[in-house]
Length: 117
Image 1 (cartoon, rainbow, N blue to C red):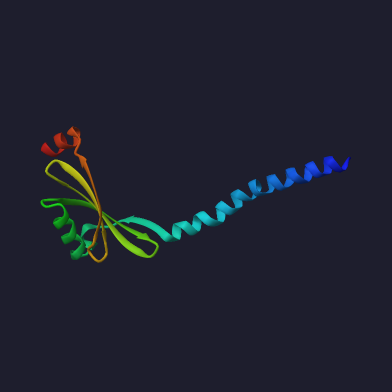
Image 2: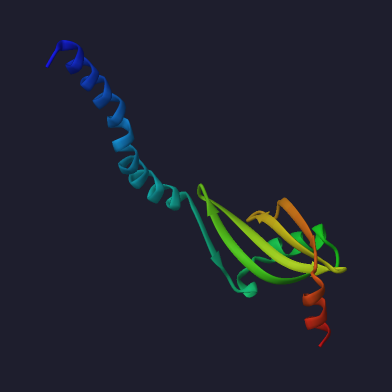
């Protein structure tokens, strides 16, 4: 084997080594990410009054139907889903009652028909 062939093999090995380590690195990092962001459905009765009031102030007339609690980097964020005026809303609210985000979608006709029955 020539020196050039040995050098080529050495270069190839160095290039392949990071690719072989990638799955190991991901296996170590992904579970750690789960520690920083967790979501769980919670009963509406467990949503703090300040959070419910913030949602009702953000979207007047909303009827809250679902609640989720997200823990993101140690912060508790409530995601409330509800309907008002034929629109569906998802509202993200901090534990202190600050409104972080409001998403709005039209309620689909099938859902409207089901609620009419």
